[in-house]
Structures are given as structure tokens and as C-alpha cells.
Image 1 (cartoon, rainbow, N blue to C red):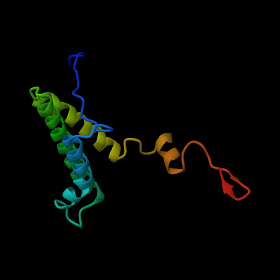
Image 2: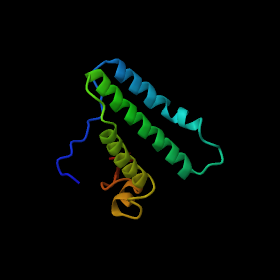
Image 3: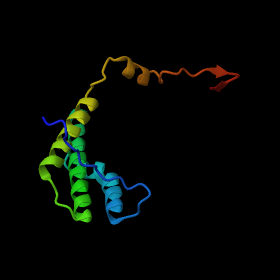
Length: 124
């Protein structure tokens, strides 16, 4: 693979009011509801997680297309598709236990690396 691959930047809309930002916010809030329409109650958390991650990948693809359309530049389906697939694979491995059994996971489960102390009845 070429080491000079430039990954497209997916849009972030913090502090920049725009139609794209509003649509992104609406999609982000509605994503679990939309994904739930395609799920069954009896499905495992594994299957439900895959559906939600799939919808998230589609959302990222649509946001990249919208950003290119608004900028008036040609949309590179292959390049954006490649980035979305890589992000999806990373999300799936993280969701299903990439860190399972590691010290990082144990620290998160046990309240982090810094322990809380109780002094005079107050947690510090």
C-alpha cells in the first residue's frame, strides 16, 4: 500500500452552524432508533451492536459525501469507502473485546487507574 495515502476528513460541525451540521446531529440522535427498526427483540447484543455499527458506517459515508458536495469537489467513493471499512473494522474489534483481559480494560472496570479515597465521608 502506498504510504502517501491521504484520508478524507470526515466533517465535524462544532461551532459551525450549517445544514450539514444540523442533519448530522439529527442522524446521530436518530441512529439508535433507526437501527432498532431493523432489529428483533430476541437478537443478541452482538447482533444488535453490529447493526448499530453498520448504521454508523453508513452515516459517516453520507456525511463525507455531503461535505464533498457542499465543497463542490468530486466525491471519491473508493477512498471514502476504504476509510469507512477500516473504521468499521476497528469499531467492531473494539466493541467485541479487543481490550478484553488487558490491564486497560481492568482499570476501566475497576474505576480507572487513579483510586478514589474516602476522607471524612467524602470521596476524593
